[in-house]
Length: 260
Image (cartoon, rainbow, N blue to C red; front, side, top):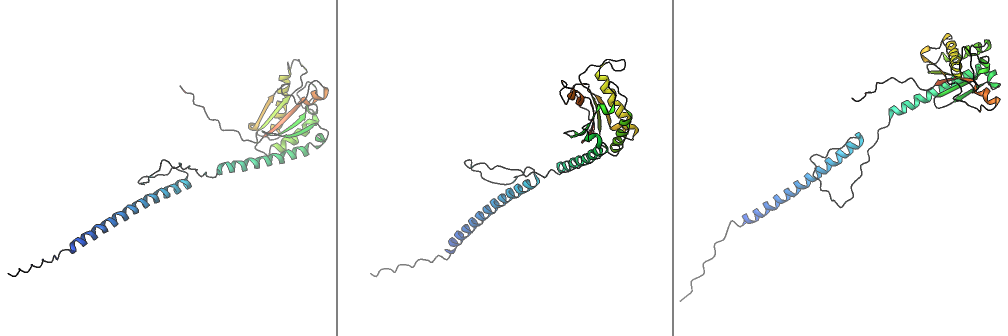
């Protein structure tokens, strides 16, 4: 008996769906990976942008929204802020140097006005931290134990006062003595004598046009010697009047709050 012919298998026309599904899955995975990479790059871009902005603006940067993985084994970066140029300090230094140069010009003018006394060693011009000081030997200005200016001293100090009247610098006039004690009806001690001598010079400067608000008179007796009082030359140097032109402007007073 002849065998029945084996029926041919029915051909599946939907096999393409399997390949299509695999393709769609791969395509979806591709877009997922691309999206993840694009998000990571955006985060890194934000971190870079914020870091650059913070460096130029000298403000702490913001990394909000950035997704960055940090390896704890890596060394921590060190942020070095960029300092802005101190414009105020530069201006202050320039103004201070300009004031110094103006003081030096005034000191040269005073030295020229007192040139004979400078050559004789009776006047010294010194530049220090506070400004420029003109030291005049007391013997040129006053009689021994007196605080009234001599006639030749009036002419010399009037010329100095005319020079000082054209400036705005604070002026301190100091009276100094040697350590030889004095006791008179007018001056019981060197304190009164040194203070009165400084006041005499201040009054003359006011008469020559110097603003009284710029002037200060101080007497130091023998407490600030510039030479040894054990010798006659040292005592003579210590008897002096010092006129200081300060390079700074008067400070604006600020009240200090006291905690309760």
